[in-house]
Image (cartoon, rainbow over all chains, first blue to last red; front, side):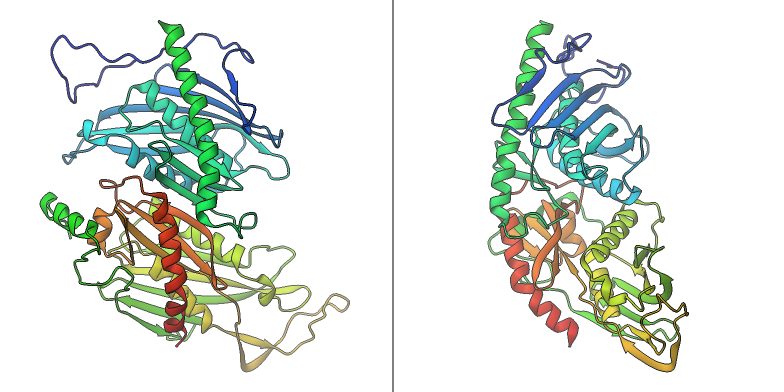
Length: 245
Length: 262
């Protein structure tokens, strides 16, 4: 973990930085880390700490069980908290940058919407009071996304982004209020925290599929997917912290 | 207006109370008074100006052009300009991207069809002269009134131009009213368990979260999403608040449309 700028709130002189799980070395694909539940829709491959110069990073491969052409590969890196110059800010400021590193398929305006949506989610989730006068930058690199008939499915990308950012924050050791994760149901996304009792983000951009369903039903369905995703992520974090000890 | 921490705290507490106490004395479901002027730009096909009581002002102009719809698929283009903000700033790009997509997806492009080959393409230019709160609601009201007073030239040549190629010719002075259903969008602020409509800038500054709800063809339509109204006070919300805000819009939107149409 990069501790060059951890001078915000220092604690006692003999304090040691909180060390979260380290990278697990070369990945063994298809073995222990490929986590999936039989009832779930997705198979998820997770690896943390790939990007060496960042404070925390995560790599996610998500493959849908229903539509095997739907696959998303996303690399998230978190830089910070690093000092921000200028006016005094009592809280850290968060920024999200999204980039498609291979083929650029998504229109720029839509990417901007996704970035502000994600920033809004994580403004509610990161304990920003802990990092005064600093900035936290999140960089999302979409390596691949496909969705059968369409070129890309923005909704599954956003879901992956939320999960990836949470994992990267855990890897960076930045304080978050809860393990946030998103669930998707028929192109509706809901990001939850606190065991599904609080919604931090809701996204519905296309109501052809779920026009007749009430919003509470949609949120309930998303919650099921959220609980699965969160379980997968927590299982991974526990396993990787065990193996690094 | 920049508020001190104490003022914000006070305002937050009063908005959290049940029922919410809003700084300008409105009810939770009450809009600020707005003034709308339509059809005042002589050189455009339709125009409107909307002024909110806090001084937020927005001008919308609609112009049309005849295009070959086999070549140009997108028949509505929205361009947003907000005074004091760069064109590449997140807010401007986000608003113009949302508006472009909503108008393209939701409106019936058949209404713009002129002949079998040609269509009208609408250029909607939005200029926000001054804005204090999230301008999306006002912009969408202004676009709604501008499109509803848009007059397009009347076609006098034949509608079937596939066999005999001819360019569309128009009547010298007769205009036809554009008749399309236009979606409108509402921003709501969530403060604790309360949902308030049309948040003023001070209310946006302390809201726990914001919700964007679109109303089209007498029902709530996509996009519905959470939007950030501030960076400091953003919190998670109760799922029930989502349902509450949709209910609120279902009750309010017909009245708002009635007011806009009158």
